[in-house]
Image (tube, rainbow, N blue to C red; front, side):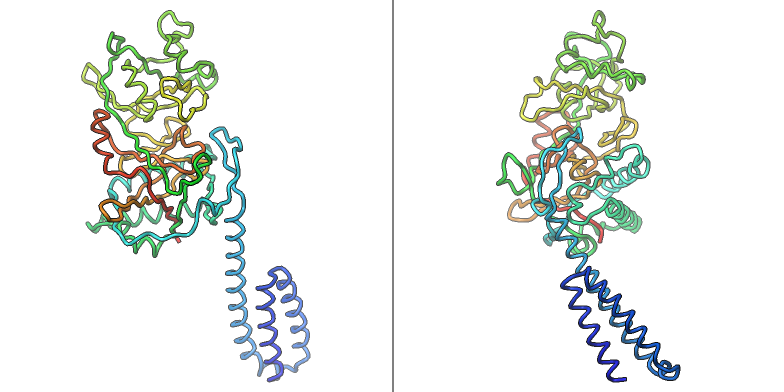
Length: 430
């Protein structure tokens, strides 16, 4: 009996060592040796088996648990190591390959510093719920949101993203119901319950950049008119429903549109609907920010959001008036973020929303940015629930939705306390 016990101990240790050396060969070896031992055990009498079985079973179960644990840890570590070093193919907004990067150049394990996280509980809950609902309602129609992006190199899946959203929603609802500050503001709670993954900027044109550039966008209020006047002489248009079949609008640049092709006497008059007339500055801000709040001369006010563009890429660095990309708008009931069509766009809130690269980073990623101000570390949380042409591809920048403002001066005063660059972290539920 002692000899058999000793053999099994040696066999267990041998298997464990072999597992660490070669996962595949140890699996075959273990299977083979297990079969041999099973055949040997058949030679014992029923009485011997009855006496040995409790001890052997206990030893076998313990050994199996240890081997399984070592196997899983080794396999998981090897998977993560291989994934992190594997090349990730970055794509542009037309799904065309641009370049490869290693995951470890962009995302690595991290930890939040011990500081309070700034967020608005109600607004964050709204954006989380709306983003989660978008996955639920439109995953089949919009396959782009099923891309995990570069976080796949850290073993993160879309299921992990959804679990993160679900957990945060549950925490916020529970904390709000109990009339208390949410636990999501506690960095210790976050470090305990989430994988914290540091995002290092990758800018092919500025490889020394390590922190993310944090730009800011806003919704501006602008006066406008239903009719063309000497002051309000720049139209914004919406496409008619049949424009999905007739892509005529993809033939015209912004300059073509502003030349009057849709106005009375123009060669495409009647093919679009006129929503409002603005100043040129109003148009450019509406296109750049994606949403505008128009105060009409007749007292009516409404949000208008970009709907579809003419298919011409945004050129980074080119001034707004020279861009050839043109956007058609639609009246909406709130500030809108990401969505594959206007009726599906996510309703978003200022202060808790980031616009980013949804193809290479991923929709619904929860982000905490860290910056130092007045000698103290500040943390701010938001969700990637919006995007734009400037972010496809873009692994070194986020755009923070700052709020609704009357003018650029008010906007500038508001964002003066926000950082231009920050350390960024992804949060993924453990």
